[in-house]
Length: 84
Image 1 (cartoon, rainbow, N blue to C red):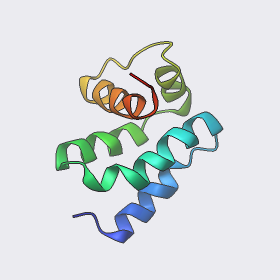
Image 2: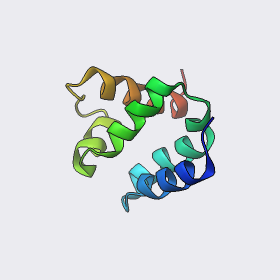
Image 3: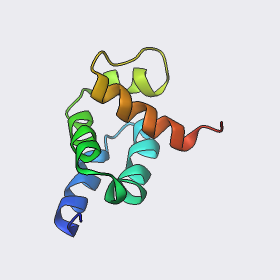
Image 4: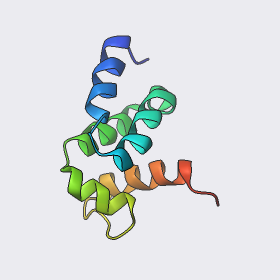
């Protein structure tokens, strides 16, 4: 279970100041993160350590992360907002 302190901290870390990232990350951390398993939670926290410009490129699908864990998390976030 995720405690409210951790969720609050992640909420603020998910607010990047770049609208394109904020509209993806903030709803994800609010709605999906609490239901992730421990490994995916760790992957999300790892994603938050990345540079905004790198994340922007990944989420705009201009390139992909080299790291498999980051690639999984980017795909999970994109799958949530893109119609199949």
